[in-house]
Length: 115
Image (cartoon, rainbow, N blue to C red):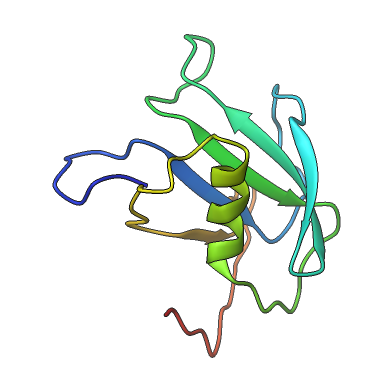
């Protein structure tokens, strides 16, 4: 999320569809249910101990998601309501799916619509 004229993100929103084998040294900051799915939320801040240049907000589902109907605005509203993201921020890209750390994996997304 940033101003489109910026050269790099100010914050990053990550919505994972699977929780398997996600090594993290971070602790859960809070748990929230959005669109009927319960997520553990990790807020990874650039504090010198992680490889992040900006805050990263990771929504990790408590159980794997195989079929979903999400409103991305509900995630940005959650962050805004908690004062993590300014309401005037721009959403410039979406990271949705899996993040394979080791081994193999895939995400197939069909019939998506962004408004």
